[in-house]
Image 1 (cartoon, helix red, strand yellow):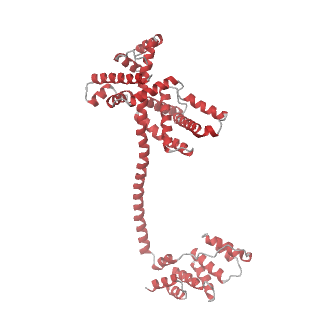
Image 2 (image 1 turned 90 degrees about the horizontal axis):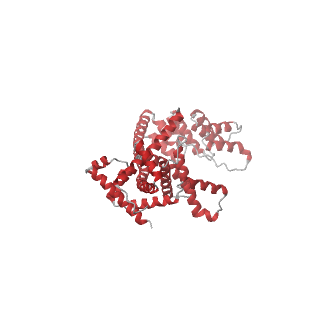
Image 3 (image 1 turned 180 degrees about the vertical axis):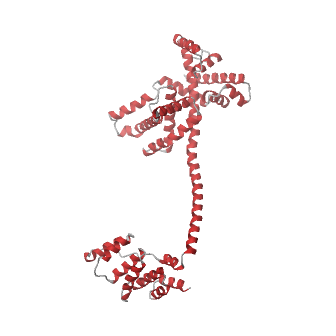
Length: 192
Length: 240
C-alpha cells in the first residue's frame, strides 16, 4: 500500500515535470541541489562547477523524463537518477581535465563512463539540431521569446496569454505562428 | 530542416496537438498513419518538435538560473531568519538570566554571594614528577586538577601520613566538593604550621569555608592571618 503510494507520488512528480509545472520543477531543483553540491565540492570541484554540472544533469533528467526514456522504479528513483547523472557528468569532467593524462582508465571505470553516455542523448544529429534551436531561441527578440516561452514552456493557453497581453486571441495565435517562422528561419540559416 | 518546405499555421497547430497529446483518437491515428507513409511529412513534424523542444530546453535552462538564485536566498533568509530568531532567543535568555540572578541576589545571603565570588579551587601542583614515593599524592592531584574532587579526596584520604600540603589540598578539595565541615577541619590542620609555604592560602580557604558556613567572625579572623590579595579584598568587603 505504502509502496503504491510512493510510486504514485513519483508518477505525479513525473507528470508535473513533463508539464513543466514550475512549482514542481523548482521544488525538485532546489531540494536535490545540496546533495550534489556536496558531492562535487568534496571531489575537488567549486560551487561554480556544482551549479553547471547540476543544471546540465537537471536538463538531461528533464529530457529523459519527457521522452519517456526514464520510468520510476521506487519513490526516490528520479532523485537518484538525477544524482547519478550529475555524478557521472562530474566524473567525466575529472577524467577529461586532469585524470586522463595522469591515470589510465581501468576497465571498470570505462564501463562506468560508458553507461553514462548511454543515459544521455545518443543521437548526435538530434543533439546538434537541438543545440542550434536553443541558441537561436536564446537570441530571439524579446517579444517573440516571451510569447513562445509562455506558450510552449509554461503551457499557457492562447486565451490566457491574450488576456495577459490585453489583445485578441487571434492576434496571439498569429503572432505565435510568425515567431515560430522567425525562429525556424534563424535555425535554418545558422545550419550550414 | 528543409527550408523549401513551408510549414503552415495549420500544420504547426496540428503538430502542437500531437505533441501535447490533445488529439482525438481518430485524429491521432490518421496523423500517425501519415507519419508512417510520408517521410517528408515526418521530417517536418520532427523539425517542429525539435523547435518546440529547443524552446522548452532553453526556457528551462534560463529558468534554472532563477531557481538557483532561490537556493542561495533561502540560505540567506534562513540564516537571517534564524539570526533574528536567535536574537530573540538571546534577548529572552538575557531577561530570564537577569530575573534568575536578581532573584538569587536578593534571596541568597550575602555570605554565599561573597563566597562564590571569591572561591576558585587552588590550581594544584604540577604533576610532572618522577619520584614515585609520592605517587598516590600526585595521582590524586591529577583527579583534583580535572575537577574530580571525590576521587582525589578518596585517594588522599587513604594516605596515612598527612603533611601540611596534603591537608591543605584535602581541605580545598572538600570545599570544592561542598563539604565545608571537613574542609575546615583539614584547613585548620594545614594552618597549624606557620612555616608552611601555603599558609596564607590555607587561611584564605579556611576563611572562605567559614564564610560559607555563615561563621563570619571566624572567617574574618582567618582572613586576617592571610596576606593574599584576595583575602584582603574579601576582608574589606566583609567589614563593610
